[in-house]
Length: 85
Image 1 (cartoon, rainbow, N blue to C red):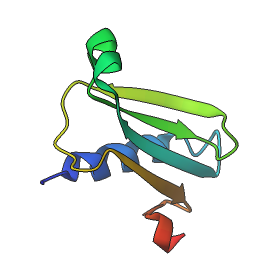
Image 2 (cartoon, rainbow, N blue to C red):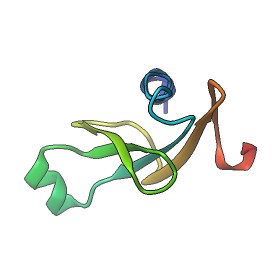
Image 3 (cartoon, one colour):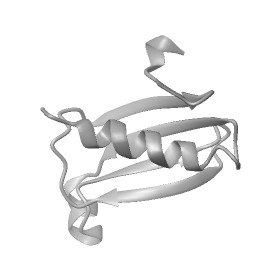
């Protein structure tokens, strides 16, 4: 899948949150069918400070990302996979 949008969106948004937290966790989650029907979004990305304090949340009506969940980290202006952190 060509999911360049995921890297672009998460990098830009996480960088904009650096003034609120030096460490940002990024959680992509595909929503269950009932929540999709209710919200109109197929997936959401939640940006937090790593201590369960949500900094920002974005809904996506359509996604081509193949996984149901993914956690990324943004530290020192660098987007990282869990295995890289």
